[in-house]
Figure 1 (tube, rainbow, N blue to C red):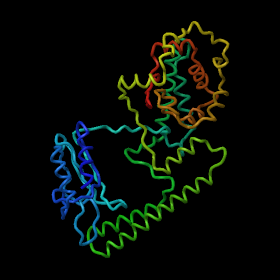
Figure 2: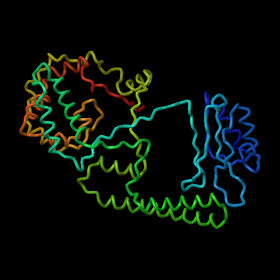
Figure 3: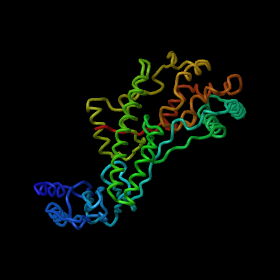
Figure 4: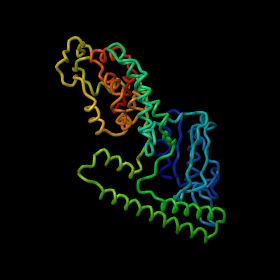
Length: 389
C-alpha cells in the first residue's frame, strides 16, 4: 500500500497515450485472480481515477503448481483512447521462465520491417568461376569504348554487367526475416535439450499433477545448468583461438554474439531539423568557418603532381583486391561493390577485353569525378546521418 501514491504520481505525470506493463504482484477478481488483496483494490482505484483501462483477458500470467490458485500478477493497462486498438494475448509456453510471455499487438499501426540485405549475397562454395569469367568476357566485349565523355555511363554499364552475370551464375543467399541467428556456442545438443524441456512443459499443461510438475522442474533446472555450461565452454574455446593477429573488429563482433546483442541494422531517416541543428551545434562551434568559406573551386587546386591521381595498372588493382574482404563495407548504390563480392572481381578474366574495359572505367579523371559530384549526378553520394547527442 505504501507504493500506491508513488505509482499514481508517476502515471499522472505522463502526458499523452500511456501503455504500462509489469509484474505488480497484486491480486483482484477484475483481472482474473482467485483472491483479492488491498494492493489490488488500491491499484484498481488508481486506474479509475486516471482513466486507464486494463486489457488483460483474465488468463494466468504465472505458472502455478497443482491445487494453487491462478496467479495473474503481470498487468497491462493503457489510456482509454487506445484501449480498443490494442490486442493482449499470452503465449502458451514459458520458455524456461515461471512467467508466461505476453504480446501486445497494434493491428491498426502497420510498421514495415526493414531487413538489411547480406553483404555477401551469393553462395560461393560451389560457384562455377570459369563459366562466370566467360560470360563476363562475352558481355563486356559488347560495351562501348570508354572515353573522357562517357566514363561515368560506361562504369555504370560495367558494374551492371558484373551484377547481372553474378545473378545468372550464382545462387543468391536467403535473407532471414525477423529471426536472430543462434549464439556461436549453440549446437544440436542444446536444441535437443530445449525440445525435451518443451515436451515436459506440454505434458504438465495437459495433465497438471504433481508428478508432471516435478518432472518439468527437474528438466528445467537441468536445461539451465546445461546451457550455462555450454556458453562457458564456448567462450573458453573462442578465447583460446585468439592470437595477436586477430583483427579487433572480429573480436568485438564475436563478443556481441556471445552477449546475444545482435540487432538488425536499421536506417532511420526521421531526423528532424531541430535535432539536426542541435547535433551540428555540438560538433561545430560558432567560430568554425562555414561551408562557403571553406569551399575551394576545382580550378584552384593543382592535383597533377599528386601520386594518388596517377593511373594504376591491373596488377596494382589485383594486389589491392587480394587484401580486402569478400563484401562491400558500406551500403551504396554502386552495384559493383554492393551486389558483387570482391572475390568475383578478382576472378575476372585477365587476358581478354575485360581488362581493357575495367581500368578506363575505374580511372575517371579527377575533374570529371568532382564535377559529377558537384552536379549531384552520382546516386551514391546520399548519406544517412545518425547523431549521437
